[in-house]
Length: 206
Image (cartoon, rainbow, N blue to C red; front, side):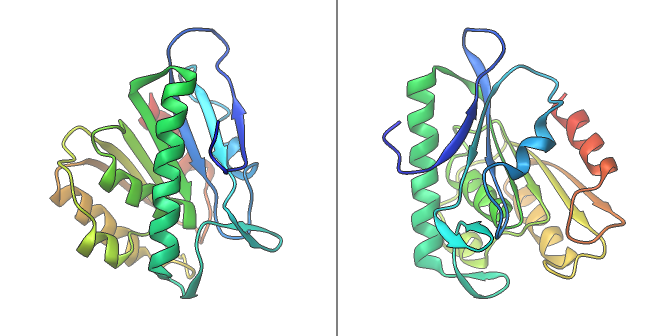
């Protein structure tokens, strides 16, 4: 891989053309964080877990911001493009099954995942956004492709005081408007992933 991204790659158990999922962690975390959430995926696949390119102790970030919900657009746009190139390079290098590619993110990673869904609707089969949001400039300015072939799982805590539930509801409505098949679920939790949410997510993948 020529990409400057630091990442963890877990190969499928069996050889041959396989699906792939690209994981994008939250603010202050790292590329090991979301691996635990996909240990019981109901299919054999490549797993690529990316480390955010910006240091944010005790971990990393995918973009900077002055207040929650308002990313620095120049940095955000650049990271979205870098991530898109990473996915395209992985498709070529690892002979991925191109009709079964997924992105999955939590917190900042969910925002990046949703932006990628907007610009890569012809490439991605599905996207998972956990406790995230779609930046307003993505809604207003990104070129939108038809999303009728994309399936999305959007999950959010009802008591999330980091990213309000209303942000996730707005994201679900936005993607539904453009034709995506959206599964939107809420959970009696704060800013995290509950066992019930994980169970629903694995059922959605199945």
